[in-house]
Length: 320
Image (cartoon, rainbow, N blue to C red):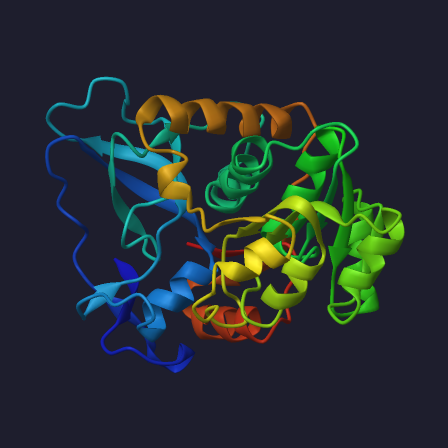
């Protein structure tokens, strides 16, 4: 089968298309013929060595496709079913071994591409707005990278919960895309702290959802009202340096959290509950998944370069 391997950490050019054997499944795993793999910033962290992994390894975590074999101990997944997953190492490949605890059923009305597009970004947007800081009617949220995959979905979910969104983007085209997802206001990364203060009569945001990291962190803290929530869920611009807790005091008894999806889908029941809700919204048309860019598996280098170069909007997927 074709797969994308990393033999040494580095830039996108270390990604190589190789021909390797299909994975042999173990007990409590299923073998899936992959239809689409999601491309995410965590993939770039693993590729570059920010998150070290012994080499060589096949990149990718997220995807969706058809089950072609089930292992010993698998009781609730059958050959022929469509499943999706958020955390199966080796997902940039034509076949993927997926734990039965990770594989979730894809309902009618949700295509494999859409399912692959929301497992990481959609569930991230869900836990951020529903659990990390549960948005309430009338809340103001700053959503950074408002035209990105998480940003667009997060904006929609905040609006579904009755909140207001100030989205940040870098170009007029991206600003228009953020507005199409429901953002009440859109601004640049230069003046969002001032903008949210004006929108809230000087009070500031109830919550900032920040996946950009290093370049936005300081102003994100400044954008919050007293007892506001700084939700740092990524570092697209780089990792945030160590923080003096006194800054949270001087900023108004602020809250700072660095959540990750693994802790918000910590068991099968929680994972299925979140995916059921997200897939349900997609199926009934109340959540729009914007697949902004599709690349063939062989074009993975371009996909990573475009993602890191901030040339993409919405979700990026590899068609397998």
